[in-house]
Image (cartoon, rainbow, N blue to C red; front, side, top):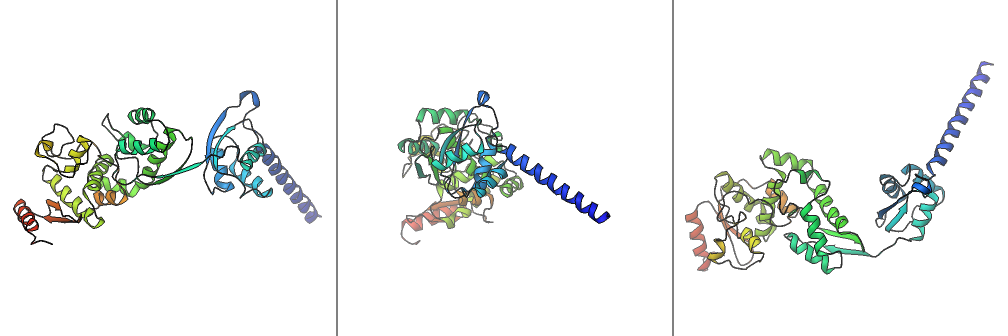
Length: 342
């Protein structure tokens, strides 16, 4: 008798649980808002996104109540691999079924544009490239970059007022949808930097007694000076040693940044230009980055070789010759010019 009663209670309990799940599932399928209070939200569904990833995007944008319910609905209706990428304008008064149908029909599908930002590009060069591709207006980019109103913690640590985001539009290959806003595109590149400059790098910056901005500034100079990967950490070592010895960095790349021209050979009058970015006239690092450094230059800035080098010069093949003293530096230059140094 007791066993029968326990079985009955267990069955009732299971029925109640199943009923609760059923009710929750159906409630979760319902719209977030009623029609009178609904608003349209723009989202981007990337190529190859599955129902779980799409559900997360929809939930993050408060278009559905539960991403797991969206995934279950998609699985039950055999829709998981049928959703189409694109930019969509979805009203939050739509239920999951209506949203699902929109994503299936690809009503928001737009052309994907792929572009690459090379290492060592300055912001002005990045803007030129984006505008040439038809991805926004120059004036809008300049306005957004001057305001620097983006939600990333590394921006909060940048003290300079002008050129705040120079160095932080991470050089990489990107895919964006045609018609993406200037802010969306900038945000995408800043997000990539945020992903790259991880907790380990932040910890290492503190070990070097440098801010993130100082590391990126040094990395940008290394990026512009180095031609081959093998030299990056050696160049970094020389610059770190100069900083420790309160010496001028004397980087031609910083002068080129002021000139907004990448001259093959600088003139003596170029070195006299008055600017806080002229590292021939000002000791220490310049006020900020001079270009967007890639991963290898960031790593070089953080993990320099352990050397006593203070000087270096570039050979015709792009490699560098390093020395500890100015006398040795001049001797090596003379040997190279006379053909005695390969």
